[in-house]
Length: 504
Image (cartoon, rainbow, N blue to C red; front, side, top):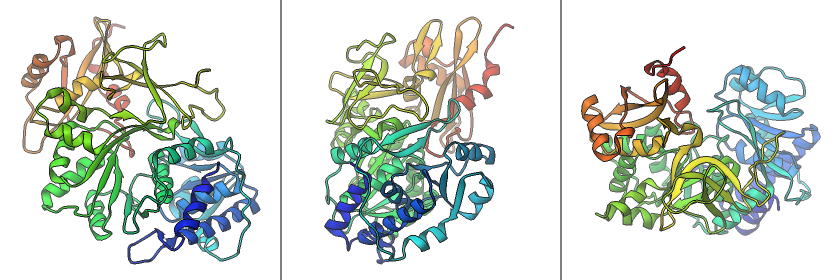
């Protein structure tokens, strides 16, 4: 097993098909991408690099470097180019000796680091696309590290999740049909390279034979224009992206007639957003894909039929499925465990545990979190209903403990987002001497509407137990998200810690 196996099969099966670039025929074919990966591997080997980094936006250099690294037997390490100079230099220093594909801006930010050789994207691609010939001598050891992905660091210092070739190939073989895409199909990739969804999109598109259109930086207007111009049929976005796309479509009255499938994930999807998207794009198949870096991407999906059944139903239990992440992939096992690690029954909240070939649960330089029986505790809270639908409630660390009662912020947010004046919502716990924690709701209003504190508190109280009613309500223009769509609750907790009463 090696990622190169996926590209080799693509080049052998449909080598003349466009793999990367515009529908006008410019870009790289699958055979050209294969050849470029071989030339890149020769570059990496000649430089003595033990790891291959990329500190850049999405471009043709991304798949060339990814598969070139796999060919050369070096882990691929896409780094977050939005980090500060100090943070980037720290991560770069951890992966030496390495060669890094950079642009002029990120090269200047990183500066000079011992045994960290930088090559500009333009120079790298010029060298890789020379027709120099190459040997097909990559290692097929499934235990070799394919990718190191640094976690977002929303709750601490970033750590490198280890994804071995067996994890990634297992995920692709179990979820993607080889040559399953028609020659006219194209996928729009707008998530950054350092997000596991970006890696999964590249690998799955290549194995299926779908043309890849890259959008280096997400802007909703540009996303819509690119999708229309390139006749994009498939796309993956995070919830904040979909919310902005919906706003553009509503404002312009435009449509996405060629878009057959839209997957979303990486964060909590507000139910009003997906309901509006389903109304605006009735012919698009929507898929909610839930996964983690440590599981090589998706572990559960809410499929198109689930979306359509839920949106058409008057049954609250079925309609509620729009707030779920669907059912686990057939190649995986998912359970909910209590604090002692024991399985719980349907509709009981606990920690999500997952087991399967694609699951890594390993971090560089640290002990694996996978149990002896192969289970990975995700640190995500959730529940599974009697029909097998998984509901994700957020990180275990985000659970609010008020008066000894564990309260999921997600269940409060789900209620808040049904109010007509609220566009986005976050529930957080604030330290308090009397209650341990109290609840603050940070809300973003719908444009042109005002939020009434008393009305919102009564609204939640009427629908939930009084212990879940927000003690404080704060109104903002926007909530803080990182670039991969994760809500930065820590920022909100720090910013509004003064709302609690804590005796010194």
